[in-house]
Length: 77
Image (cartoon, rainbow, N blue to C red; front, top):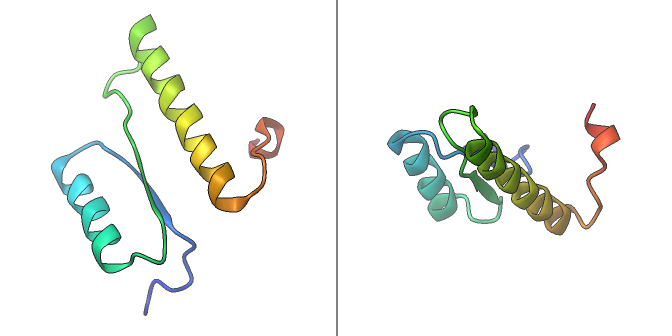
């Protein structure tokens, strides 16, 4: 289809519409992975930064599992 060139999609769980996109992607484009990243709406405060950090570390782990390669922080710059 028109999205066959994509290896997958990553979306933040920021609204009901985005969550629905994630659900639909999994239902109709199953061969291509979809990653849902749960991040706080506001990054201020120690707790929210800790939640964001955990979300990013979880996403990093999922990417490493998907690609079979480590994600190096310096390569992302």
